[in-house]
Structure formats: structure tokens, C-alpha cells
Amino acid sequence: MDNGPSFCSPVSSEENGAENGDSSSNEDGLNDAFGDLAALPVEVGERRPTCLRCRRPQKVCLCPFLPTQPLEVSTCLYIVQHPAEESRVLRTVPLLAACLPQGKCNVIVGRRFNEEKHPELAAVCRDSRTLILYPGPKSQNLDELVQHQEVGTVTHNVIIIDGTWSQAKNMFLKNNLFHLPKQVQLNRTLSSQYVIRTQPSNICLSTLECAAVSLSILEQNDDIQEVLLRPLKALCSFQLQHGAQVHHSKEHLLKNGMYDKPMPKNKRKIKRMEKLVTDHNVCPR
Image (cartoon, rainbow, N blue to C red; front, side):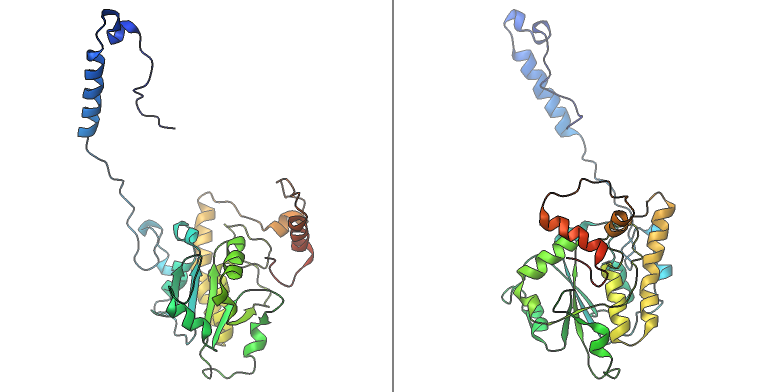
């Protein structure tokens, strides 16, 4: 609701001059009031200065935790980002992009993608070297895919969908282009370090974490994972020191009797929540 002055508040007949049959004074008063308001200068809220590299406010810049030079990688990432992620303050994709050379982390925002409007993305999807990271029964473990490849023999493209789990599922199912590349998933038992945002299960990772693990596998260099996770850990540590709370996964809350929201009535949603507790292989979608 607007907490500003209300010009619709009732006034007595003595105040508005109606007792004498004269309403012009009230109209003149309203005109004067609106005129005064129109003459007031418009105050433009100043945005905090932002670091051009990590895209964080300068006072909480994370550049000390970024590599001094972009990581040299042959793999090219394509982050297909749901529009809602653009406005999130604590998003991880800018940190990822800041760690990699220009052109190695391409962010494409949208919900629907086709060959006519997105010819470059369509070409990437049709490339035999392209992989899309999305867990499911048709997915191959990324470790198994590259275990017999020599470093540098194949230069992969990797598509990662950036959004909530429900948004990612919706984008994957409704975009035929995303069904063209080979579907892969991560099989490493890594618990998410992104503790300031709720995940469905303990093994579900943020976009930056997915990219870090994928690149370390494809480049066959575990140091990449450590370097990419450093700014994420710093971000979470800073937020926790300034009042943020640890967000346990839904799996953790259910297993420990801490889930305080009403249980769903829909049978499919109930089964999905049961899967969080019993299935330890893939992130449920």
C-alpha cells in the first residue's frame, strides 16, 4: 500500500466550503497540491558501485578469491539461464564466468529456444562434441564417457541449465534442441557447498559446482574444481557471517524430521519427496 499523502480522505463540509455552496476552494487546493508534487525533484536511488569482474558490490568484492589469470580450458560452457536467475543477488554464474577466459562461458537467457531465433545455440546442440548435463535414465556418467579419452583429443561443449530444479526440468522437457546432444550426469559424491540456498537433496549441486566438476573431469585436472569452488565458499562464508542461515536440503530436513511445511496431497509430489530420502544416485527432477 502507498503510505504517502491521501487526497481521498474524507473532510468535513466546513473544511471544504460546501456549507456555503462553494467547492472551488477545494478543487483549487487539490490542484495546488498536485502542482507542488509535480515540481518536486525526482530522487534517483544510487546503486552501489559494482566490481566489473566478479559483478559483486565493491564492498563485498570476491576478486581476491578468483584466480589471478583465467583458467586455461579447452571445454566451452553454454549456460542456458532461466530469466528469473538474472535478478538473483547470490547467483553463481558471474563467479564462474570471471574464472574462465572470454568465450569459454557463454550465458544465454530465455525459456524457449529454437533454430530460427537461436541459430548459434542450435548449431552447438547439433555438434557431435556437445554434451548436456541433465540427470536421468538416459544419462551417461561423465567420468565413464571420458575415461578412455586422452587429454586434448576431443574438445567438448557442455550445456548446463541454470535455474531452480523445477525450472530446469521444464526448460529441458519443452525445448527439443536440448534433446539432441548426448545427455550426461555427474557420479561423484560431492555435497553442495552452496549452503545459503536450499537444494532438493544433498548431492544436488549449484550451476557453478556442476561446471567445476564437469571441467575437472573433461580437462582431467582436479585443481580446476578447487579453484572454481573457492569464490563460492567465500561467498557463503561471508553471507553466514552477516546473518544468513544454513539452508539444509529437503532430503536432510525430511530424514531428520525437520521439514516444517505441510506435506503435499498430490501423489506424484509425495512420491518425489519419498525419492529424496531413498534414492542416492541422482538428483530427482
